[in-house]
Image (cartoon, rainbow, N blue to C red; front, side, top):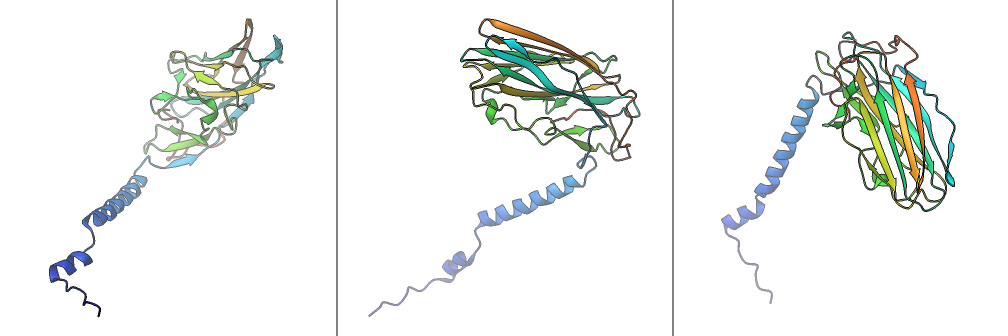
Length: 269
């Protein structure tokens, strides 16, 4: 004969039916977080507008040159800019790639400096979350570093709107070989960005492509130089490439409104 189920006291039954306090707290926190996100999204300056560069020009580069049993070149270089705002300030981007073939398993290093020689007191690099607005970032595993879809730029406007500027139009990945590669930045100068790539075993089979880009701010006509040096074993080669904005003044293809305009580039990511 089956024994009857034990009788539960009213207190025990209430405890069983009561929703755990922790679960209630989780739900409440989630609702508050959702409300906070929505509220922040409604604040001035929390939105962003997708904007393309007003101008993009090709920077002329020399042909590849021999380097030991391999080769070295700077290619696909470009200069992009936004038209100046009412205060006369603008931002511009310099981008390109290094093509290096070590011709064997030899220690290979490449250094590139991009210098902004534009006139004016505001000639300096833009920043992203306290870092420079330059890509790739320092890394000892370059293949794992992701390329952002856009750069988020904060403009000095009444409502502090942000805009999204494209990055992947010039860079899809930071290296196209599996060869171990480290990239570093050497010091900081406000109008000069540099990268140092180190490949201890060379580039592997064939050449490696190493893209780069940097965003500057200025109140004058963009111009500067790209200086790159490659070393493979005991052999080295250098390239010096000047650039200067051809279209000047820059035509504003996307006239600024009360919600967006070129201004203080303080948050480029």
